[in-house]
Length: 561
Image (cartoon, rainbow, N blue to C red; front, side, top):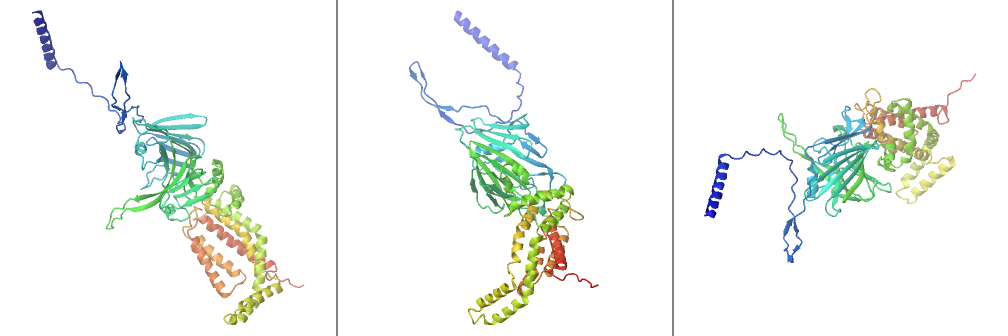
C-alpha cells in the first residue's frame, strides 16, 4: 500500500513539474556575440593506442587529431615604419609589404614620394607575399589576417606577424627595421617536422613609372637582376623569361630594377632564388564615343622567389642605385649599377662631378665643367691625333696616285694588291708617318669618354634634376629636341674641319654619321646629350686654336717692320 502511495506521489510530482514548464516556460538565452570565423582544416584520423585496465585490452579505434588554439586576427591592420629615408607600410593580411616610399625621391608626378611597390592595374599593389601556387596552407595564410605585435628598442623596430590553424600548421613572419633602406626578414613555418617548404615572392614590377618612362627603352622598369658571390651580375628583361630559372643559393642580391632604383632580396647562405615569369592581364578599355572596345592585353613581367626549408632568412632592400649607399649595404652591391667595362674610371669621374655640384648646385653646369676638365686633361692625346691626321692628309695625293697606278692591275695580277700595299708602306716610312698615329690617341681617350657617358646615363643625381630654360629634368629627353639638333650640327661641323684622310667612299659614309648619332640621341636623357654637345663644341674650339697657333695650320702672319 505504501509503495502504491509512493508511486502516485512521484507521478503527481512529475505531472506538476511538466505542467509548470508548459505554463511558465523559461526565458530564452541572450544571443552570443559573433566570433570571427576560424580557418577550416580537413579532418584527420589518428590511430588510437591500446589501453590496458584490470587485465582488459581495449581495441584501437579512430580518434580526432589534437586540436590547438588557432591564431588569427579579428580585423585588418597596417603598421607604418618610418626613418629619414624610407617609409614602409606592412599589412597583417599575409604580412605583406603594401608600400615602400623613398622620402628623398619624388614619383613620376613630382608631388608624392616615390613608392617602389607597383600599384597601377593589373598589379596587386603589394609585394613579399607567400609563394603559394602549390601549397594550400600558404594560400590560406596569404589571405588570412595575422596577429600582430610591435616591439621597439636598441634603435630598431621589430614587427611580428603570426598565423596558425587548428591542426598546428602556422607561420611567423618577422621584420626588423632600422635607420637605412633595409629591412630584416625572417619567415618560419610551424607544424610538421620543421622542414616544410616556405617561400616569399618579390614583385612583379617596381615603382609606378609614367607612360613616357615605360616607353623609354633606357629606363627598363621591371628587369630582374642577380648578383653572385663572385660579383657577377646577370640581368633579364622582364619579357625575356619564358620559364622559371633556378638561380640557386649563395647570392649577394636578387631583385627587380630600373635604371635608378632596385628592390632586392639579400639572401642568406642557404636560401634559394628562382626567377619566374608572370603573365598579367591589362584591363580592357570599354567602348566610348563610337570607339570600339579594346580587348584585355597580356603583360609579361618577372617575379623573384626566395625559398627555403622550414625557414627563410634574408634582408630586403628598397632604395636607390647609388654607389656609396649600395656599398654600405653589402660589399659588392655597387655592381648592380651597370657602368660597363670601364667602371674603374667611374669613381674619380663621379667625385669630380660632385665637387663641381657642391660649388655650383646645378647638375647641368657640373656636367659642362667636368667635360671641360676632361677635355683639358686629354689635350696631349688630342694634339697627337691631330698632328698625325694632318700628316696623313698631306700624303693623300701621293697615296691616291699609288692607288690609281695599281687599281687597273688588281684583277689581272694576283700580286698587284701586295705590291700596292708595299709601295704605300714605303711612302709612310719615307715621310716618317705612322698610319695608326691618329687612331692610337683616340683609343686611349675613348675609355674615359665612355666611362663618363655611362656614369651620366646611370647617375641617380640627374633624376628629375633641372638645368635651365626648357630642360627641367636631365634624366628625361629634351622635350623640344633642341639639344639633339645642336649636337648633330656641331658634330657635322667638327667633321668638316677634320683633315681628310680617307677615300671618297669613307667620306660619304662618315657624312651620314652625325645624322645617325642625332637620331640615336633624340630620346636619350638630356644630360647625356648636353655632355656630347659640350664635347663637340670644345673639340671645335680646340681644333680652331690648334690650327691657328700651331704648325698644324697657318700661323698668324707677322708684319714686317
